[in-house]
Image 1 (cartoon, rainbow, N blue to C red):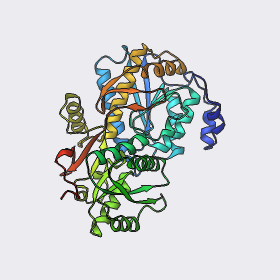
Image 2: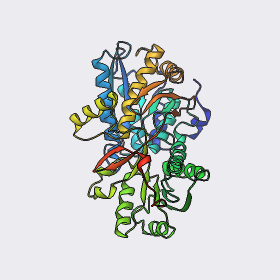
Image 3: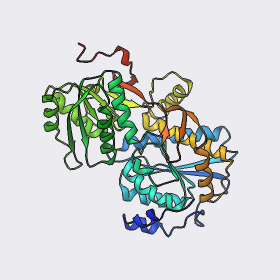
Image 4: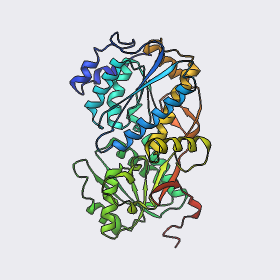
Length: 401
C-alpha cells in the first residue's frame, strides 16, 4: 500500500502529530507491550465531555463483542486484546491517544468515534499503513484519500439524502425547516446532501438556519423563522446537546413541529437536566432499533442492559458490528498477529472489500474500495423514553389532518 504524498505534506496539525512520524510505521514498536500470540485492537473516543454518551457506548459495546469472540475461541485461534482511550472529542487528545496505543502494541484501530478527531488520526494511520475502521465518524473526509480507512456508519451525504427520501416517500411533511451547525463538517455535510435531495421530493424546504460552536445556546431566531415559514417538520442534522436546547426553546415558544434527526441526536435522552418528555415522538434515521426482535439484537441489548443498566444506542451497535467486521476480515485473510502492521493492513483492505457481514446495523453489509459501507437505513421514534421502530404507514401528516 503506497503512502500518500498529499498526506505527508498536509501534516501540520499539531506538534504531537509531527512527533508521531518518528514513532515508526509498518512494524510493531520494539517497546510495545504486545506479543505475537494475540490481536491488539485499539479504540479512541470521548468518555468525558459533551459527546461522552457516544464514546461510552462504543467502548462498552466493543468490549462485549471482544469478550464474546474470546469466549468462542478468538480469531483464527488467537485471543483479542482491546484497549480504549478517552479523547474528550478533542483532536490533539485523540492524536496523543493514538500514539499511546501504538506504544501499547495496537495493530488495528477501531475508531475514532467522532468526526474531527477521526479525520486527524486517519492522517496518521494512513502514513503508518495501519488498518482503521470507525464505527461512527461519518464525514466523507474521514475516508477520502485514505485507502486504509473504512466506516461502519453511513457517510454524511448518505444520511442527508436518505433522510430527505424517507421524509418524502412517507409524506411526513409538506414544509420542512432545517437548523444545522455550519462550523461542523458532520452537520454541514448532512445538510448539503439533504437539501440537494429535497429538490427531488414532494416537500419544500421553507427555511434553513445555521449556527456555530460559538453560538449554540440561543436558537430563538432560527425557531421563530421556522415557525413563521409554516414548517411542519424540523430537520436537525446536529448532535444531541444542541438538539435538547432546541426542543426546550421550541416548547417554551409554543412551536411543536415534527422533529427528525440523524445519528448525532442519539443520546438526547441522557442529557443532564433535559426534560425528556419533550423528546416524545422525535424521529431518528438509524440503522439500529433496540426493540428489534431478531436474536442478534435481543442478545446484544440484553447483555448491554444487564452490564450497564441502560439500553445501547446506535453508536454501540456500530461498534459491536465493527469488532465482528474486523473478525470477519481477519478470518477471510487468514491473518495472524505476527504479521507486520502494513502487511496486516494490506490483507484486511483486500478482505473487507470482498466480504459481506450480517450485523446489528445491517444485513449483507458490504464495503467499496473508498471505505464507505452499503446498508439499509431504518427509522425509530422515541416513545415513553425509549427508542422503538417507527411505522410510517400509521403516521398522519399535518397536511392530511
